[in-house]
Length: 344
Ligand SMILES: [Zn+2]
Image 1 (spheres, rainbow, N blue to C red):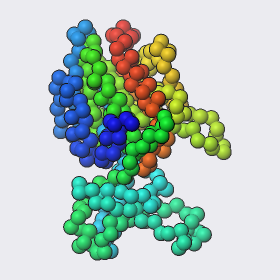
Image 2 (cartoon, rainbow, N blue to C red):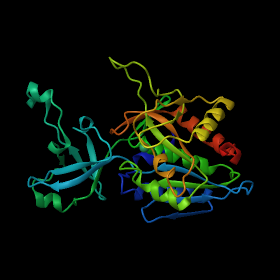
Image 3 (cartoon, rainbow, N blue to C red):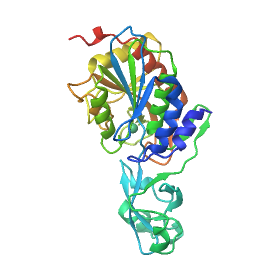
Image 4 (cartoon, rainbow, N blue to C red):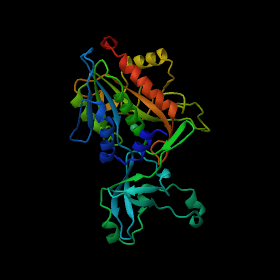
């Protein structure tokens, strides 16, 4: 059992409320870094000093936040209305157990039992505006003592491993966080390594925007978890990213064109080390590369991601070999970085 993935995915850190995850990561990295601090937005920024071989600042980012819900109203019957925080598909929510607010009050996203549904209701999609979280309160006053407007609600999912796959919530992006912790546990790098565990990625790459500005690195690598798109589909059977086929390398998404020199270096490094990889089909989505590459005067940046099925739902799935290979590929990429790679 990967204890770090278990610990980090079961922790709660819906965007804007990352403290529980941040404290956990701080304790994990403290023995392996020279200094760390928390900035105004809540990013955890750590420095692992280099050997002095290369006068460079290299940033490695992993966002700490996860998608979830925010309480938007306490209704007269004691039920809770909510808004999505980050990109959620309402079809994955009904009937799921959540933990609400700092006291982790248990609730369930109410769903009418199948016995009481008409045929038309069974075929319709329910939007979040029609859903409520039920914490067992019978009137507003009862719920108001335990829950506040603006409280987050997070999914409740125990981390499990079965053979080489792992199930859990928030693998996006605790898988990236765990990979970055592993990179910090290694020997010093030729350059100063600035680790940025960032906040609020799921609501628009916000934490990385200020972290990139503050660190102002020469190069940046983003560690992510990306959707595997490998399930049977009637009209499109061409796979994009497939579980178990290796780290996913971004080229272009809706927020960034990855630095082509850094992408080429990553691919060469994978080939040279016999590591599997898959180039992610260019298209939608976005990672913190979109923020960091535009910090200050610009930063060459690229993304390496662990593929996962069912991202942004209460239970995702990764292949543990992909996760291990993301760490190996990121480390080999970092240790072979040279300024010559970036000459025009
Ligand atoms: Zn993510």
